[in-house]
Length: 344
Image 1 (tube, rainbow, N blue to C red):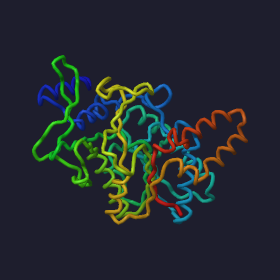
Image 2: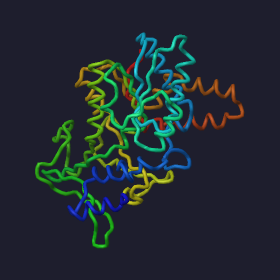
Image 3: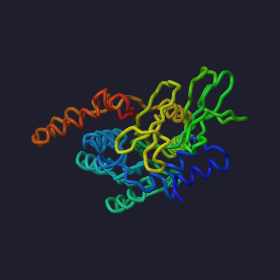
Image 4: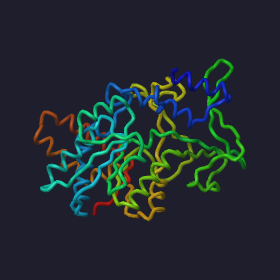
C-alpha cells in the first residue's frame, strides 16, 4: 500500500484527513514515507541544506561548540544531532573541534534518524555512534543537542479563526477524486497551549506542531535535569504573522503540497519564540535567537572564507557562492533563524 492509498483510504473512512495526519503519512510513514525511503538531500534531491551548501557552515557550528567546551571546561558529553542526514554537519563539526582543542573531551555521538539510507551511511561513517529513532531513548546525561532543518519537517496543525469560532484545516476529495483543502468546525477543537486565542483575528491562521512541542519539551527537561546546551537552526520566525507557511518541494522546485504524495518534501516555518518559551518554562534562560547571517558573521565565517580562498584560489568562486547563500539576506541569511546557547 502506497502513501496515496493510505491517504485516500483514511479519507474514505472519515470523509477527510487532518493536515497533521496527512503530513505524518506522507513524510514519516514507516513503510512508504518520504523521509523514510527517499534520498532527498543535494543537487540531485529535492532540497539542499546549509551543511551541504558549504563546509563553512559546519565549521562555524564547530567553532561555537569549541568555545562552549572551553568556556564551560567540559570534560565529556553526549553530542546529539536531530535529523543528521548524510552526517555532513557532524563531520565538519568534529573536524574543527579536534583541530582547535589540544585536549579533546570524551564525546559520545548520538543521532536521531529514521531514513534507511541515511542510517546505513551513518553506521558506516560513525561506527561508534548510536542511532536512535526517538528522542526519548537518548541518554539522560549532560548533552549538547544540534538540529539543522529538523523541526520544519514535523507535521503541523492549522487553526483558522472564523468570526467568533475556530476551525481546523482538513483535506478532502472533490467529486472528481481530486484532493482539496478545507477548514472544518469541530467541537472541543484542540488548540496549542502556547497560543493566546484572543490574539487571533478573523481570518488569521495559527500553525503548531504537537510533535515539535513534545520534542522541544523533552530536550528542555533533559537539560534542566542533567545539564546541556542547544543549537537549533531552521527557517522560521520569532513574531507570529498568522498565515499559512506550509510549502512543498520536489527537485528543488516549489510544488503543490497535495501533489506527489510520498514523493516530495513538506515543510512549515518554525516558531522560535515558542521554542524559547518552552526552555524558559524549564528555567533555562541563556538562549539567543538571531538570524543565520548574524550568527555566522559574528563567529567569523567571512574571515574563514578568506582563509579558504587563500588555500584554494581555484575554488574562490565556489567558496564565495556558498558564503553568499548562507549569509545574504536575500538568500538564507534572514529567512533562517538560530536559537543557541550563548557561548560568551
